[in-house]
Length: 105
Image (cartoon, rainbow, N blue to C red; front, top):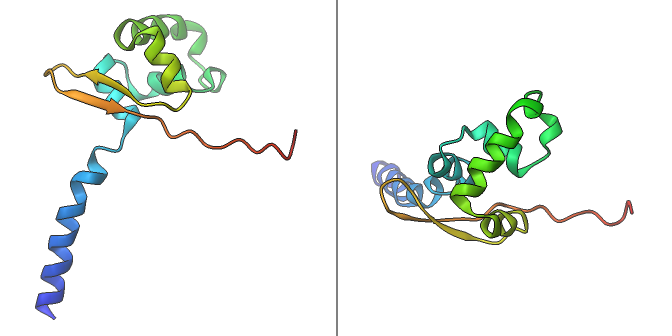
């Protein structure tokens, strides 16, 4: 019984690093200096955020200054983009894009 528990704990620790780096909004927030909420506003439906009228233009300008216009467009298409964080490490970010349901069209 103890061997099974030990094996399970070791397997959990081995899988943890793969899951820990799978937060593209958090990674983009750390790289751009914007809050996760503002990153979501820039990348998603901005009208879902009450403050978008006041902060969207500034957040978009900062985001594109750091990521670049081409990088921003690539993220929106679901492609991966390699960026450098504040410590000089390369971070590859890719947003999960959900397939669109074309039956309703």
